[in-house]
Length: 171
Image 1 (cartoon, helix red, strand yellow):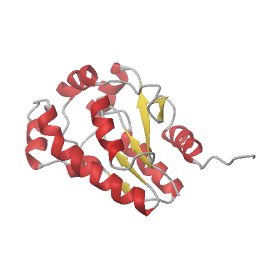
Image 2 (image 1 turned 180 degrees about the horizontal axis):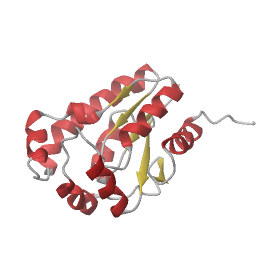
Image 3 (image 1 turned 90 degrees about the vertical axis):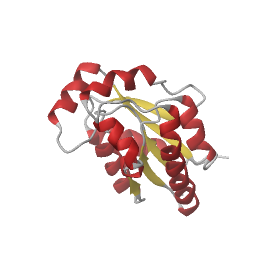
């Protein structure tokens, strides 16, 4: 039994790459939360318009539904920017005690470079600063880990897999 791992962070941080690796190593399903966005959200972001909290609520509800379903089924891995504590609280409510966050983070310049080099994604570079402004790092009471995204995706996935292994008691 594994938790549902939410790979969080701003665009360009490597969420999708890392999440796919973690899911493969844990042998659990993977979901790309970008695919759960309503078309209106994708249109706004494509046009360079930041989403509001109101825009994000249906998307977060869809992700929370996925989390709840997969927590009951034995675990999963999903990407989600989860920029604010309130968003993460909503996601945790879907499966209390069974959600763990992995936050690849790092330098804005590297994020911008990654975003300019990738193709086929709707998120424009112009929204990076609004995402960084909204980002609230994991609190000490939130289950998860923050990892420097200059590590390789394999190294980041290793951190997550080690942290998600059930802890055994020596009692």
